[in-house]
Length: 547
Image (cartoon, rainbow, N blue to C red; front, side):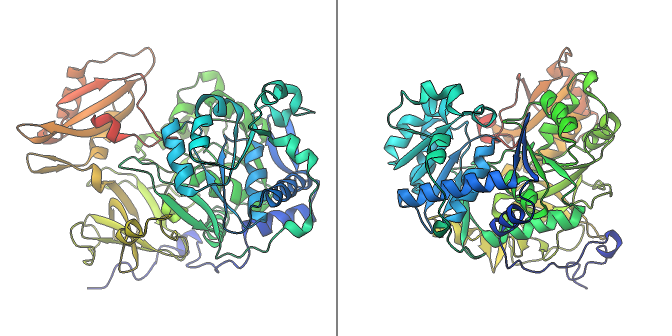
């Protein structure tokens, strides 16, 4: 039998190249080229503020010299606890100029979570929000022995004099340094800019920890540049586009699909602190944004905004990071006029390994009801293997674990050689996702391998039940998990958030599922919540839901 993974007859139809050259330059090189070639062009839009490439480069060079003064150099780590603020870009490029790696941290972390990742990464410098320092970070930074602490806030970039807005607060904190004041006092020195190659560490991004302790995935500069070029080539992005940063910059999607793509293409980067649906729609029009990648929960939030916020909304919409109910892209297109293209990626593969071609519509797997994650990106080797034996390749149409190879796969987990070894089999990265490929080459994620529910010996994939629940008009969000059952081993539990002003009973929803699912897949328990707990990127915290 011919190996269905050896050829890609579908790629020419969508004008997608089979392969792309491995980049010799870095995103930092691209950013600095923009600063030289078009210094006055806008690099960042931040509410009413326009920041040029020259201004952004100057601030980054000042930060690089400040890091040199701190003794930070090649291979050191700089932690960032920021939202989608211009300071993130300044600190990232400044750290890269010193050959240092950034460690983006979720600003919502509690002290224990923050301390763990600061200690594990051995970060020398922390740049964070002053409000976070006061509420969560102060003791964590002390216990993790971070040497230098710089604080800022979301209003600083909008002020003529940064200290005018919050300086009085910051000046009362003797153990910290104000970020913009430090930059203003530090003249840039070109000798502090170290040469950086694609083989060097660019970032350590911690996995979301939905199934265990977060691990720091090491991404190299060439990984970021390659996948940024995939987005540019796949979608046809140019400097005339503008990205609306709906994904958080501290997540791999924001780092690659927002920051890196903006630098590589020279397009504007539209930031707005943190995601808020009405503000996202307003600023999409103000920025004249054309492109974004965001979690499906963000698009669902946009759908749930008042009718007055409707109208044409972007034109190059992509989603990833969580399962996509097939009905949502259709609803979004009917409301805003733009089809949401599905994608697939992981922190470990530095954003996408699969994308739905721009302008194409993702098919639905008739067996599982899953919306396709798309086709493999250029240079990507993707196949389905047996869940129990990763050395056995599954034929087209058969479910198994998705495994990947390519120039985008991470360099391993920071300080965790055993976990790194366990993540690979014979050179293939084991995603942990149960998937299927159809004869035409489209891939579908059925569910997470670890999320499978074993009810009386029957396998139940939560996603299949969730997709049915999303079809009920009262359901806004649906998460399905397995819970201990003395009789069945596990039984199916649904955690639901309803649409505003709409009511439904557990009995009604169970009956709705029973009409559409085999009996063993029907939820035995239904719990209603105001909001389903999620990671910052929209993934449901199933471990928390089980408990």
